[in-house]
Length: 214
Image (cartoon, rainbow, N blue to C red; front, side):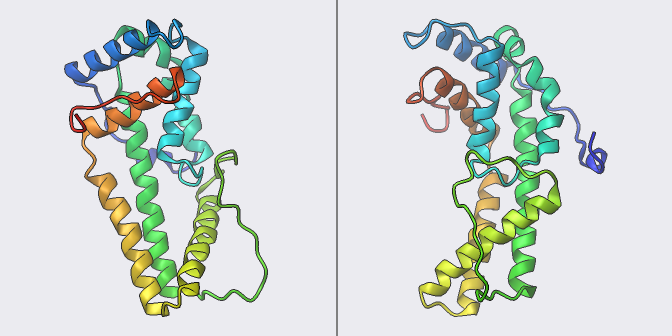
């Protein structure tokens, strides 16, 4: 494990019987669907895993490379666990880490808005599309990405003729709303994101409709 990860360890998350049945049935239906007629094998499970990570962190700025490496054990058994037992515990484990990283980013944003100097004298480059970029190696690298993104958002508000006080309020409240939405996400909501990622592996236009959405 990477240094410091022992401190973030949490009690194992266990799927409920209903959740496991839903997961197993969804996988079975997709395997027999008109889209592929293909069992959930290791190759499809790997694509499923990556799509779920991207559904949470499309910008590749929250999950660290060490996070992804830590999830390599459940990733290796994802296909068989999904098909045989419907175990979706990994979905909640990964989501909990996502919420933790988001909490760290929000704390960083609030600190920078209070103490940093936002000047745009020197030229700098930052790609807003990081879908194909590597994930940050560690928290220091992640914070650099968060800082660059914050500068972009600050500049956008500045060009809209807002005062520094107004900009700080807008960006702080935006970050807090995102974190609050994640903290209020139910288990059913997490499962919907997870199984939608599975459905999209078979067909990019398909989604799983959870009970709350239904």
